[in-house]
Image (cartoon, rainbow, N blue to C red):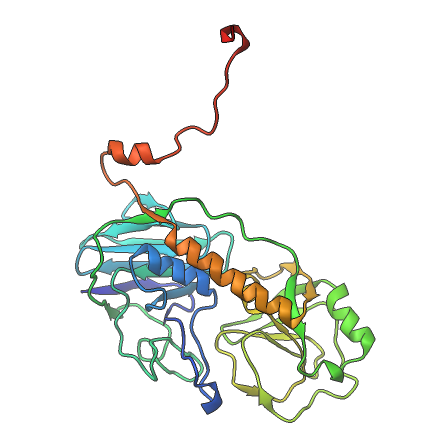
Length: 339
C-alpha cells in the first residue's frame, strides 16, 4: 500500500507529533505547525493522533494510491478533488487506484494536512517520522517531497468507513496572541515591555518552519542583544540586533543567544502559525497559571472534538443516518392555525 506524489506543493513534508524529550541533546522537536489540525486529519482516517501525515504550505499537490484508501484534509478551507469530483475538507473521503487526488490552495490558512488511513509508514528516525528540513532528518529522505516519491502506508486496522465531525467546527477564536513574559524580559525597559502589547505586529514573508519574523514596533534591549546561549522552545520570542521580534516555530533550534522577551503559549502557537503574510495582531500577557489552564482547556477541547466523529453517508442515504440528523432548526406555527 502506498501513495505516489504526482505534484508537490510548497514545503510538502512527512510529519508526526515530533521528537519528544531530545532537545537537551540538541535535537529539534519538528512535528506539525498546527498540531490540532493534524490530529483531526488522523482521527478522521481512524489513525492515532500522532500518526505520520503530510503537511503542506499554501497548496497541497496531486496524489495517487496503489490501493483503495481513505484520506482527510484539514487545516483550512481549500479546493479538494478526486478526479473532477469535489470533496470537502474536514471529513474523510475515498481514493481508488487510477484516480487522482488534487489538493488546491488554502483560502483561509497557511498550513494544511493530508492524512491517509494506516498512516505514512516511513522508517522512524530517533523515535519519530517527522521531517526536520534544516538538518535533513527523518521523513522521506530528510527532505521536502518531490514528484515521483512513493510513500508506504501502514496497515489500516480500523472499520472501513468515512467520518466527519458530528458538529461543525466553530470558527477559531480571534483576539490577541497570549504570551508569558521571559525568560529575559529583564533585558528590556518597562516602556519596551509595554510596547510589546500596545502595538500591532504584522506577519512578514520571512517565515518558515523554523521561525517567523514580525514587523511593527521595534524592541531594543537596554542590556544588549547578546546573551549566554540557553534553551529555546517553540513559541520563544527572540529579539536580535535588528530589534524585530522573531517567534520560533516547530523546527526551532534548541538553544539561542538572543534575549527572549516572552514566549507564546502552546494553545495559541498554531493560530499564530496559520496567520497569512500581512496579517496584523496583538500580543497579550498572561500569567504562568493562566497559560497552564489554557493548555489544559485546549487539550480537553481537542479530546472532545476527536471523540465527536460520526460515520458520514456514502451512496444512498439510509433511514438510520437521517434519523440521527437534526434536519430542521426550528418550527414556525402560523397564527391562522392556532385555535
